Length: 497
Image 1 (tube, rainbow, N blue to C red):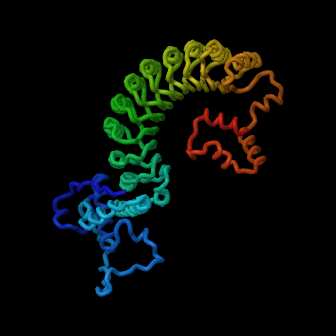
Image 2: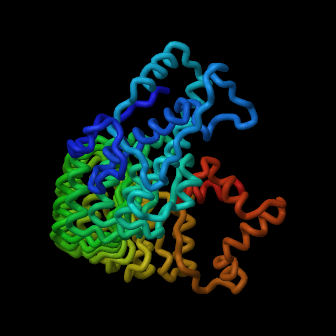
Image 3: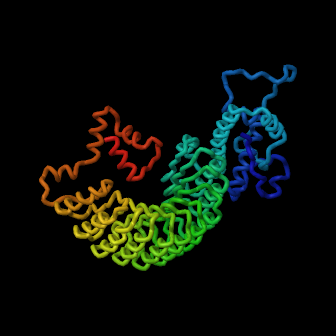
């Protein structure tokens, strides 16, 4: 696979007066310019060492002696170089490299392509180390070991803006990393700009977590400009805990209104209030890409809740919505009930801890009587009683087309009367699972079974089959992903156990 060198970066004219100029490049270059300069320096060193990129010292077989090209010419030792005077030059392929490249293209095979890909990963390690040296930061050993993996977790590494820029420089041409975790790294504006520049060149990275970096309004502006371009392959973006306020919500929502690339967005643990809810509602009415949105742990109250629900009326793509830990109240629950009557795209809705009492639950139940899409409804930590729980399950009974699989009311104390009603509902909808707190009037034995520690059951199963608990969980998710939907986990548990 031929290497495409980036175009010449716009460095100062004095930098290009000679073909090779000693000294480090300016520190204010963009990520793309840095990558070009470093790649050019690496190419020159390969040429001076007498090896092509396909035969770099890192990939050659050291056990096989090298034959000199001519026997008559005396061997000359390369002049020693000072490690502090690394050579840099413009990001263009030299004439020798271009001629060699043309010779490869005429007789390239699959094996040669595979060798080139292996070499290029090695070159990326050198690129990262060189970038760290120039930025004055310590290389992250974990990143060096895992550059060829699809999942890289650099959260809580204290990278800072310079360390982030070094990582971004190495990722410009990386084709392995699909998921990148950078939470809690004090990225600041400079580090975020480096990541955005990298994403415009890297079309393999699909999921990125930059939560808990206190990006604020400046960070929101940078992300907003990036989202408006729709140029990257990124579809999962996590921005939790970045001190975003209503001004940031306005910028982000303006960009997301026309963005169709982002499918999963996490804006939890920010400081959006009712004004921010209005911006989110307007965005949801226009967005055609989002499938999962997390707005938990914000400050939405009645006005923001109603505005957000108005946007949901027109949205036809959103499937998962987390609104837990806000302040919707019964008025917001009433608006949600109207949404559930008309919306047939939502599959997962979490409105836990929103101050919703039996009155609000009754409005939601009216929507559930006709809803044909919702599968999971979480109402945990709301001030509702068993009467509200009965309204919920009876609404499912009245809806023959209901697809409800899980209702979480695990803080509600229920009785045997509730269980009898639930048995009748489950006879019509056998897929339904209602999670409640405990049962009044049950014998001690039944109550004990209700609260059996699930980890003990899993450990018992693992012991019986002579496997480890880790192997058990790996068997549930053969893809090896780090996360798994609750519904899929439950189904896998039922099949395995």
